[in-house]
Amino acid sequence: MEYTQLGRTGLKVSRIVLGTMNFGPQTDEADSHAIMDAALAAGVNFFDTANVYGWGENKGRTEEIVGSWFAQGGGRRDKTVLATKVYGNMGADGEVWPNHDRLSALNIRRAVDASLKRLNTDHIDLYQFHHVDRHTPWDEIWQAIDVLVQQGKVLYAGSSNHAGWHIAQANEAAARRGSLGLVSEQCLYNLAERRAEMEVIPAAESYGLGVIPWSPLHGGLLGGAVRKEREGGGGARTNGGRSAGALANSAIRAQIEAYEDLLDKHGLQPGEVALAWLLTRPGVTGPIVGPRTSEQLDSALRAVELELSEELLSALEEIFPATGPSPEAFAW
Image (cartoon, rainbow, N blue to C red; front, side, top):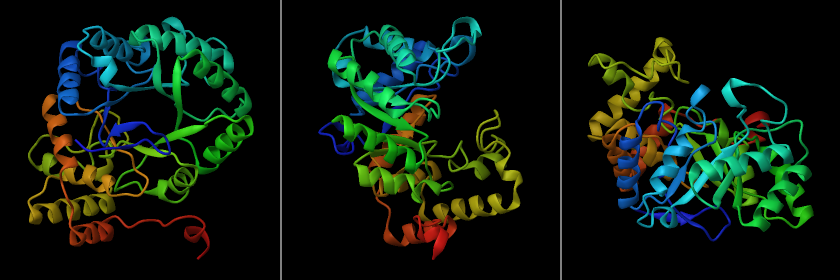
């Protein structure tokens, strides 16, 4: 396994991030534990979750599964850089009640204690804001985080789904307080979705944030969707995910067919190339992979060792052209 610093911090993390979103909803506790054991054995030390994972009436379940894995001991918690998130409503029994969501100081205090209990730990290494809160000022958010850092409950703060100007706002506000500010941004970024390159990634690089791409296979679209469809296994996820039905678009289908044909010529697997491509991108710490099975984890691990030739990278650029950074993409 390869490791890198998380943004401008001294924290070393693996270049593959184990996403746990499927633990509970699609992967039972025993299999989830087995996947985490296999990931740790392979050197993956960066695990990502969120308080809402498990979803619906089972929200919080994923954190509980991670917590029960930590409870087995064997140095599991000590070896893991643990990231979770706050923002979504965590009211009991589906109840929507004021101050049980978003990023008020009250909800952050409540949410972190609940996550710590579910995760069976005394601290969270990276506490991420799952979404932008347009109604809470950054000074209030940083006040809450500063208290948690002083208490030892949180070590670092990160963002997710934030625009470039939100990152700038956040870290300028933190700087005024003498706080560390955001050290990472978790954003939608892959070969088929490159808008983050316009402003989010330049902002992250400028402020020293590590970039953690989510949905690196774009909901399965970059994981051999056309091939699987032809073999009768279904194309991109048909469970209502981001890319459900994408292959019905003739332009997208042609693009994915060109992608898969190119990789067939090189004898490479589409999903592994999609991950390996992200590892070549400036500012990227590591993509989040969300395996439902041990076999999917093995495929993701192979991507770390995959070296893409300049010829292949150029060909990929032709199929999935970049929009370009801001302001050039808008002006010239």
